[in-house]
Image (tube, rainbow, N blue to C red; front, side, top):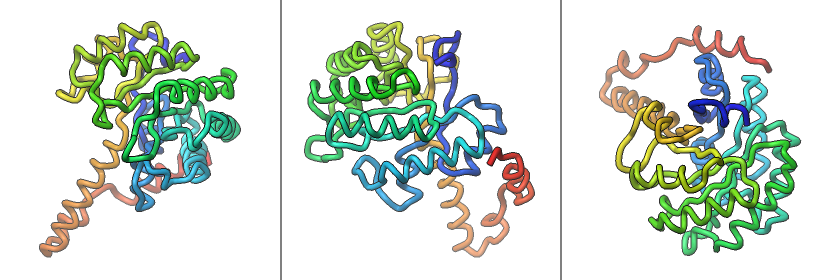
Length: 264
């Protein structure tokens, strides 16, 4: 929690495989996170539909931590379970796997009713906190804004209840604008708030987000999609017959150097 409470907070980028994690560690980041969306994509599956198992995500998170030696926050969707007891079991497994943090969403995996009812969502966070026993940082997250429910009042209500249930960090991806973000930060203070990149209307700088009171900044699958954009452009060049443009990139010597630095 020390990173969350110091002046300015910190940036916690999301890795999607061993090499990306090593790159982030080499760049000097103090903690990293998984991305459920990026992990699912690497496996050819969809995010938020329970298509990636808890065991797969735990193995992935352990790999990132083992290679880098950094604290790892697990982006564990809805906690991998239908009941609060299932969520507690996931948190216990995350602790046993050496994770430093875990995120629990109020999503359901059901596209017809993507957000769980208020009381159910709060009970799941409470169960996660009770299982954590202070051994792992629990982030309570509501996905209202990215699930077609642009209700700031309900978002604040949920986050406030998550904090009262004991969540260490609060998170609502993509509030509509900076005013909404500041309203969230103010309403739940002093509990730290994580932001996914920025509000929905404009990408801000790290300094601007910190000025707004944000304590943790994550990027979700953005680094992964950035890398995939490079792959797509190289693929187009290859189709066009341009081998030079298609094969320009990081050297394998650089990759080998990063792998040699792993703590594995």
